[in-house]
Length: 181
View 1 (tube, rainbow, N blue to C red):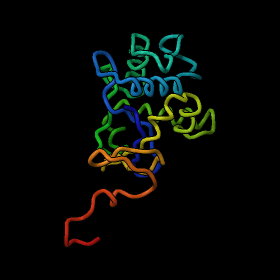
View 2 (tube, rainbow, N blue to C red):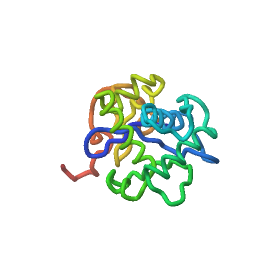
View 3 (cartoon, rainbow, N blue to C red):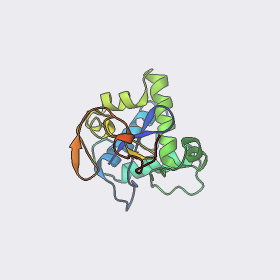
């Protein structure tokens, strides 16, 4: 399921599972990749196919054509796979760009396109333009996992209980007995 990934600064949209031909293609992950492609190619003078992908539809040949084009010309992959993989949680954003992760390049290109054309930040643009992403992009994760309370929504934590409010990770991961912070 798509979510927000908190690097070191502002959170970015992220997929949870790979997207592409013969991949799991979880609905919100597919929708997010399609929305990023639209943000990038919408005002581009040259497109691989005249018709843009429609966020909210299943993965197909149209999306494959756009990802292959993006991987070839923007990511500069020698052998495009047509697959968009999530970035490993332990990897820093700049490393993901350097290692040519398509998702990192999609985020970078969409962020650039949206800020140049709309003078907006990427996440508010995506939520405003594609309202069905509002729910998934309300979940924030970082290298330690989901951050309860960050969204202000009721979330399941720990042993299956639910809670609300703003509080930190320490509230759920107390130190072993006898240790202090």
